Length: 131
Image (cartoon, rainbow, N blue to C red; front, top):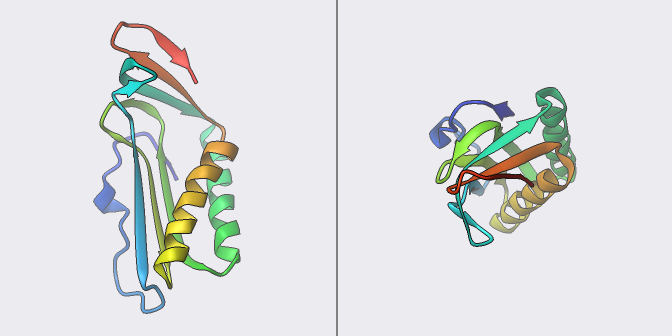
């Protein structure tokens, strides 16, 4: 899911019972206030929403098809995201903790590698840089 508003983590946590999952693992990617020795004030994320959402869903579906996870929820924010705010949130439910932790790590890596989301860092000295 691609969102343009602040990610409220509680809105994406699993609710209800799930007797098949013994583990729920979450990951929150937060904009750092420093990168490479430079003070970062915010990041502007941009993408083609439909294509990015489709690829995120494809990643989740591929992992679920392997049969080791029961549910995957991914939310990536676009637009201006200030230092200290969440830009990426991932939740994985699985029968066992190892599979859940592994799936979260794989989802994050696949998003960074495959999803066409671009970011422009804004620095305290008023300069910017596309990464």
